[in-house]
Image (cartoon, rainbow, N blue to C red; front, side, top):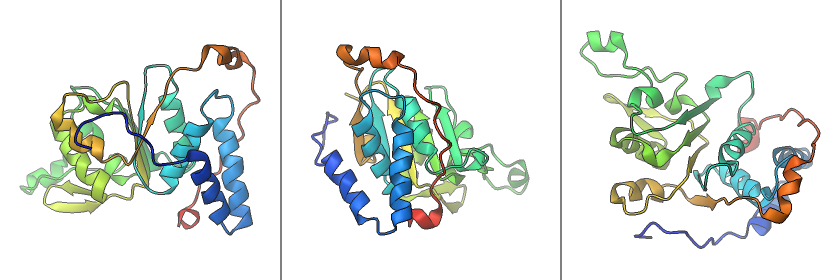
Length: 232
């Protein structure tokens, strides 16, 4: 759409999620998806459909935007979804950052290579930063500077990062972003907003369900992330 507004979803979350489960031929993998989802949803209130849509989006290799006020579990959902793709002992597979208007490209894409500068080249050391990970979470994405946003457009759409004179392939399965507000009236952000195929609006827990937040829940079991073969 031309204007940035709250979209009407064409997805039926329950039907699409159930359809995904039905299409999985491998019984072991089907069980893994269901067990993993139950772990993701453990201890959360009124977040089942949001988690289903988020998991479906990430497994499909698309980008996800979570929009809602503070305290609605946006960051928690993003981190739990990230656990489906990254092992706890492999931090190089996951990148997370809270963006502000003062954030620099070095913080997201890596520092400039001193060795490359000595050779009259401009190149970043991207190892461990966003261009080299399987999944990334950027909080308050619409507060980023134009230099960061411009580089993100190519990463989101084509999975490519222009590192100096080189075009670097980005192995990212999905980028999850979060924001407390829509970029209303900011035309320069419309292209970035358009790159997120799925946008989930999250609100506070309903007053009648607030007591559930104080209920003690069992400790979450360790999540076994999906392998590349399983994703394929």
